[in-house]
Image 1 (tube, rainbow, N blue to C red):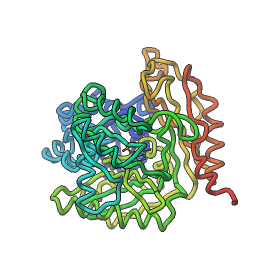
Image 2 (spheres, helix red, strand yellow):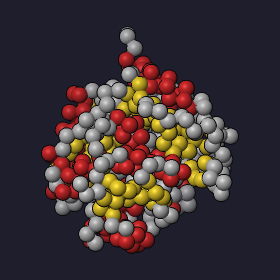
Image 3 (cartoon, helix red, strand yellow):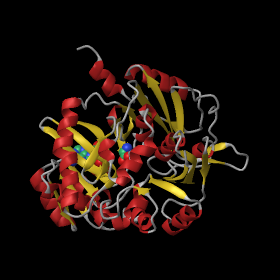
Length: 432
Ligand code: AMP
Ligand code: GLY
């Protein structure tokens, strides 16, 4: 069998998990990760390439020189910059949406208008460019008010204002153009929704969709969903809150109309499509779309994926996704993020991470995120979310126990993590 070289773009926990999984494919000779982290540097068959994820001309030139047969894009920034358009124009297969389709994530105003056009259930909202119109709309909605910077803001562009004063300050800061730069020139104001959140992620191609295993993230920094929003502090799969009936409803009310709407508007979508869903008393509502795999959802989901990922992504690129089958480990995978003191605000880098050797087993895996190798080849922190330790267990509780026990062996000065990852699922499964 002929094998090929694969390029993974990005340097987070998601990209470590993607590289690890793709490297297991018998169809793959080498996985290159640009720029990667200390985890991908040490993974069998994987090699880091020192090119930043948004340097599209350098990535393109490098991919051409190294006979890359498949490129998988992890983060949203290069997608929004049109990396897929550029690779495909040169005949290089690249898994991810075009820049136009990536607007579902890169512009919240675009996403809201799209959902309204296609009857996709979401919070009532208005897009504004000045503080007074924003406050007028908030007066009609009532408090709390959800205020979102239009553009990409790494999960930090959403403020839930409890008072009118806080809403006004937030609007002034975002529209003033300081805190969020370009991302804040338009602001979306939304009705506050209450309920439980879930991540619904599919492989999408034209009008074909292959749903992945269900999952739930933990967006807030602290236990019991307190503290500021983060990129995600831990995740598990499956998410019992998304039972088969709800998954069918989300497919029928959200995913299929989204794909149909994109096709009708002449912007067919190929890539991972991630709907962040609030499960309200009156049904699922879309909080946001992401046009990529979730981080940290990727880590537990891929830990459960038994099928080879390469043919699935290739079939999406070739328009034959409907012929794909997908097998999951029936066990629960649960991942806990170790973050650096200060995250999601400012944090120090370069802190040694000790105790990593010997943690990985058949059912435990440390996926690196913000890590690097220093001049002595010692693993040190290099980001806010440092790693995500994933454990497989027969149920959520046993996966949770295993993950925390294993995490206890890893030391990093100032490192912290939530101690309640998976608790909602465990509570749901306890006898009444
Ligand atoms: P987003 O980036 O749009 O997903 O927002 C980040 C987080 O803010 C979500 O994961 C929710 O926890 C919260 N959030 C966003 N929109 C709303 C809403 N309309 N009502 C309540 N919470 C929200
Ligand atoms: N875990 C949330 C995200 O990837 O956006």
